[in-house]
Length: 197
Image (cartoon, rainbow, N blue to C red; front, side):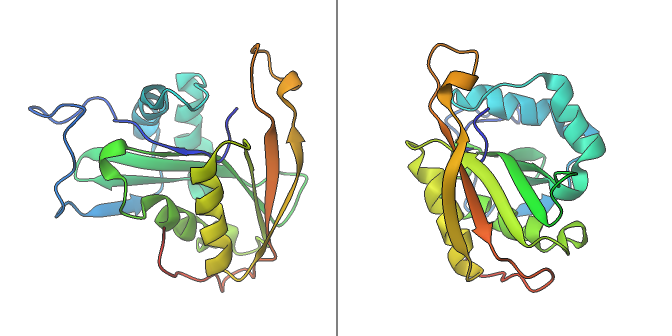
Protein backbone atom coordinates (compact mmCIF):
# COMPACT_ATOMS: atom_id res chain seq x y z
CA UNK A 1 0.00 0.00 0.00
CA UNK A 2 1.16 3.50 -0.74
CA UNK A 3 1.14 4.76 2.80
CA UNK A 4 1.59 8.39 3.67
CA UNK A 5 1.10 9.66 0.14
CA UNK A 6 -0.48 13.01 -0.57
CA UNK A 7 -2.21 12.58 -3.89
CA UNK A 8 -5.30 14.24 -5.24
CA UNK A 9 -8.65 13.35 -6.72
CA UNK A 10 -12.28 14.37 -6.75
CA UNK A 11 -14.88 12.80 -4.48
CA UNK A 12 -18.03 11.30 -5.87
CA UNK A 13 -20.74 12.41 -5.92
CA UNK A 14 -19.91 16.01 -6.71
CA UNK A 15 -22.47 18.72 -6.05
CA UNK A 16 -25.01 19.00 -8.87
CA UNK A 17 -23.81 21.20 -11.71
CA UNK A 18 -20.10 20.71 -11.03
CA UNK A 19 -17.54 18.70 -12.95
CA UNK A 20 -14.26 17.16 -11.93
CA UNK A 21 -12.60 20.32 -13.25
CA UNK A 22 -14.54 22.65 -10.93
CA UNK A 23 -12.29 24.26 -8.33
CA UNK A 24 -13.55 25.01 -4.88
CA UNK A 25 -14.57 28.65 -4.48
CA UNK A 26 -11.75 30.57 -2.84
CA UNK A 27 -14.20 31.49 -0.09
CA UNK A 28 -15.02 27.82 0.64
CA UNK A 29 -14.09 27.11 4.24
CA UNK A 30 -12.40 23.79 4.88
CA UNK A 31 -13.34 22.12 8.17
CA UNK A 32 -11.58 19.20 9.84
CA UNK A 33 -13.29 16.48 11.85
CA UNK A 34 -13.12 12.80 12.72
CA UNK A 35 -14.43 10.49 10.00
CA UNK A 36 -17.79 8.78 10.32
CA UNK A 37 -18.85 5.45 8.87
CA UNK A 38 -20.92 7.45 6.38
CA UNK A 39 -17.66 8.96 5.02
CA UNK A 40 -16.29 5.55 4.06
CA UNK A 41 -17.64 5.49 0.51
CA UNK A 42 -16.39 9.01 -0.18
CA UNK A 43 -12.90 8.19 1.14
CA UNK A 44 -12.85 5.08 -1.05
CA UNK A 45 -13.87 7.13 -4.08
CA UNK A 46 -11.22 9.76 -3.35
CA UNK A 47 -8.57 7.02 -3.36
CA UNK A 48 -10.00 5.43 -6.51
CA UNK A 49 -10.09 8.75 -8.35
CA UNK A 50 -6.49 9.55 -7.41
CA UNK A 51 -5.25 6.87 -9.79
CA UNK A 52 -2.12 6.59 -7.64
CA UNK A 53 -3.01 5.45 -4.14
CA UNK A 54 -3.52 1.75 -3.54
CA UNK A 55 -7.23 0.95 -3.63
CA UNK A 56 -8.27 -1.01 -0.59
CA UNK A 57 -11.73 -2.52 -0.20
CA UNK A 58 -14.62 -0.16 0.45
CA UNK A 59 -15.16 -2.06 3.70
CA UNK A 60 -11.79 -0.89 5.00
CA UNK A 61 -12.85 2.76 4.70
CA UNK A 62 -15.99 1.99 6.69
CA UNK A 63 -13.71 0.58 9.40
CA UNK A 64 -11.72 3.81 9.46
CA UNK A 65 -14.87 5.67 10.49
CA UNK A 66 -15.95 2.94 12.89
CA UNK A 67 -12.69 1.87 14.57
CA UNK A 68 -9.96 4.42 13.76
CA UNK A 69 -11.83 7.71 13.89
CA UNK A 70 -9.76 9.07 16.80
CA UNK A 71 -6.55 8.77 14.77
CA UNK A 72 -7.96 9.69 11.35
CA UNK A 73 -9.32 12.94 9.95
CA UNK A 74 -11.43 14.17 7.05
CA UNK A 75 -11.46 17.62 5.49
CA UNK A 76 -14.75 18.97 4.16
CA UNK A 77 -15.82 22.06 2.26
CA UNK A 78 -19.56 22.30 2.74
CA UNK A 79 -20.93 18.86 1.84
CA UNK A 80 -17.86 17.96 -0.18
CA UNK A 81 -15.17 15.68 1.25
CA UNK A 82 -11.90 17.18 0.00
CA UNK A 83 -9.31 15.15 1.89
CA UNK A 84 -8.56 12.59 4.54
CA UNK A 85 -5.75 11.00 6.49
CA UNK A 86 -6.05 7.51 7.91
CA UNK A 87 -3.84 6.60 10.82
CA UNK A 88 -3.65 4.28 13.79
CA UNK A 89 -1.70 3.51 16.96
CA UNK A 90 0.15 0.19 16.42
CA UNK A 91 -0.83 -1.99 19.40
CA UNK A 92 2.68 -3.36 19.95
CA UNK A 93 4.48 -0.03 19.53
CA UNK A 94 3.41 2.46 22.19
CA UNK A 95 4.02 6.11 21.45
CA UNK A 96 3.78 5.76 17.65
CA UNK A 97 1.13 7.24 15.36
CA UNK A 98 1.30 5.48 12.00
CA UNK A 99 -0.01 7.46 9.03
CA UNK A 100 -1.46 5.10 6.45
CA UNK A 101 -2.98 7.11 3.60
CA UNK A 102 -3.14 10.81 2.79
CA UNK A 103 -5.44 12.06 0.04
CA UNK A 104 -6.39 15.59 -1.02
CA UNK A 105 -8.85 16.52 -3.74
CA UNK A 106 -7.21 18.24 -6.73
CA UNK A 107 -9.62 21.15 -6.39
CA UNK A 108 -8.43 21.78 -2.84
CA UNK A 109 -4.70 21.91 -3.52
CA UNK A 110 -2.63 24.88 -2.40
CA UNK A 111 -4.55 25.45 0.82
CA UNK A 112 -2.26 23.55 3.20
CA UNK A 113 -4.98 20.98 3.91
CA UNK A 114 -2.66 17.99 4.25
CA UNK A 115 -0.46 19.82 6.74
CA UNK A 116 -3.49 21.04 8.68
CA UNK A 117 -4.81 17.49 8.91
CA UNK A 118 -1.48 16.22 10.28
CA UNK A 119 -1.42 19.01 12.86
CA UNK A 120 -5.02 18.23 13.84
CA UNK A 121 -4.26 14.55 14.36
CA UNK A 122 -1.17 15.00 16.49
CA UNK A 123 -2.96 17.51 18.76
CA UNK A 124 -5.84 15.14 19.57
CA UNK A 125 -6.32 13.58 23.02
CA UNK A 126 -5.88 10.10 21.50
CA UNK A 127 -2.34 11.14 20.51
CA UNK A 128 -1.36 12.69 23.84
CA UNK A 129 1.20 9.94 24.42
CA UNK A 130 2.58 9.93 20.90
CA UNK A 131 6.33 10.57 20.72
CA UNK A 132 6.88 9.64 17.07
CA UNK A 133 4.98 9.68 13.78
CA UNK A 134 5.75 7.02 11.20
CA UNK A 135 4.72 6.45 7.61
CA UNK A 136 6.06 4.81 4.49
CA UNK A 137 6.75 6.75 1.32
CA UNK A 138 8.15 5.71 -2.05
CA UNK A 139 11.42 7.32 -3.20
CA UNK A 140 9.65 9.09 -6.08
CA UNK A 141 6.95 10.70 -3.93
CA UNK A 142 8.39 14.17 -3.50
CA UNK A 143 5.07 15.74 -2.47
CA UNK A 144 4.65 13.50 0.57
CA UNK A 145 8.29 13.82 1.53
CA UNK A 146 7.97 17.61 1.48
CA UNK A 147 4.75 17.49 3.52
CA UNK A 148 6.29 15.31 6.25
CA UNK A 149 9.50 17.38 6.25
CA UNK A 150 7.41 20.51 6.83
CA UNK A 151 5.56 18.79 9.68
CA UNK A 152 8.90 17.80 11.24
CA UNK A 153 10.16 21.40 11.02
CA UNK A 154 7.00 22.76 12.65
CA UNK A 155 7.51 20.35 15.54
CA UNK A 156 11.29 20.72 15.81
CA UNK A 157 11.68 17.00 15.14
CA UNK A 158 14.14 14.94 13.13
CA UNK A 159 13.26 12.55 10.29
CA UNK A 160 14.97 9.18 10.08
CA UNK A 161 14.57 7.09 6.93
CA UNK A 162 15.08 3.34 6.94
CA UNK A 163 14.02 0.30 4.95
CA UNK A 164 10.28 -0.28 5.13
CA UNK A 165 8.68 -2.68 2.65
CA UNK A 166 10.66 -3.69 -0.42
CA UNK A 167 8.91 -3.76 -3.77
CA UNK A 168 9.31 -7.54 -3.93
CA UNK A 169 6.95 -8.00 -0.99
CA UNK A 170 3.99 -6.69 -3.02
CA UNK A 171 1.93 -8.91 -5.32
CA UNK A 172 2.05 -6.46 -8.23
CA UNK A 173 4.69 -6.91 -10.90
CA UNK A 174 6.10 -3.44 -10.33
CA UNK A 175 5.99 -1.60 -7.02
CA UNK A 176 8.47 0.86 -5.61
CA UNK A 177 10.00 0.27 -2.23
CA UNK A 178 8.08 1.85 0.62
CA UNK A 179 10.70 3.58 2.77
CA UNK A 180 9.89 4.03 6.47
CA UNK A 181 9.99 7.62 7.72
CA UNK A 182 10.08 8.20 11.46
CA UNK A 183 9.51 11.74 12.74
CA UNK A 184 10.43 12.42 16.32
CA UNK A 185 10.79 12.91 19.09
CA UNK A 186 7.42 14.59 19.45
CA UNK A 187 6.33 15.84 22.86
CA UNK A 188 2.75 14.75 23.63
CA UNK A 189 0.36 17.63 24.22
CA UNK A 190 2.80 20.34 23.11
CA UNK A 191 2.79 19.85 19.37
CA UNK A 192 3.19 22.98 17.30
CA UNK A 193 0.21 24.22 15.36
CA UNK A 194 2.24 26.29 12.93
CA UNK A 195 1.64 27.27 9.34
CA UNK A 196 0.83 24.22 7.24
CA UNK A 197 2.14 23.38 3.81
